[in-house]
Each structure stands twice: as structure tokens, then as C-alpha cells.
Image 1 (tube, helix red, strand yellow):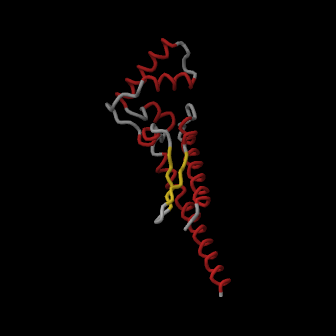
Image 2 (spheres, helix red, strand yellow; image 1 turned 180 degrees about the vertical axis):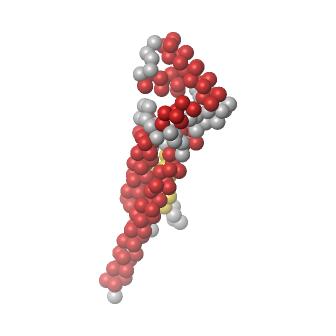
Image 3 (cartoon, helix red, strand yellow; image 1 turned 45 degrees about the horizontal axis):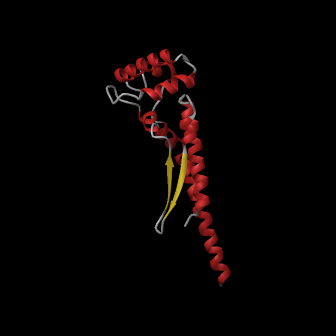
Length: 159
């Protein structure tokens, strides 16, 4: 069985690559989504699983948001506006937040303006996994090969 340390190397590689893709798609407003990327190794008798975790709004960053969907919470938009330095006056920040909320409600996410300015802005998870699948397979194959070689060496030592 592959040990937890080996899987941890794989987990760290995957979250690093997800972070790079978020930056590539210009999704670094506050940095909180990238900072939230983490992994857990879950071992059982039958398997060792790798679980990748992130803040729950990562789903909206990955898939976008459909027009007319549940409105984006105003407090989240207020925080984003302040983090981006768009405005500091609380009354103006609130007005901007409501305007952004309405635009998202009408256009969805990514908005038409964002698409024009940055290009592709969704599916950072799928894009990352597509880009690194061969590397992941190679890493897993290498880990398994080392385990098989170690087992063979142990068998030869016993005889």
C-alpha cells in the first residue's frame, strides 16, 4: 500500500497546480481561495484516498453562476470591493455591491465584461486536472514501482 507521506507529495502537487490555474484565470482577488486549497489523506483497510478541499465558493469560481440564480451575498461583495480597493466609503461600497449583485443576477458569472477582459474564467479544476493528468499518473506509477521493487528486495533477502 502507498503510505500517507507518498500521497501527501501528490496532494501538495495538485493544490499547487490548482493555485497556478486560479492565478492564470485571474481569480486572485483576496487570495483566500488559493490559501484555502488543502488536501487530506484518508486511509482505510481497502484504500488510501486523497481529498482536495477549498472554500465552498470555489464551486462558483469553477462552474460560474447561472443568470437568475440565488443572489450573491452582499457581505461577500462588500468584502471583495474593499479588498480590491475599489471604494472605501461604506455607503458607496454598499451601492457598488448592490450594482454588482444585479449585474451577476442578469448576466451570471463570469460576466460579459470579465469574459471580454480576461477570456476563459471557469473550469479551473477541470483545466488543471487535464493539464496534470499525465504527471499524476507518472507520480503514482513511480510510487507503485518503488513499492514493488521494495517488496521484491525483501523477498530476495528472506531467501
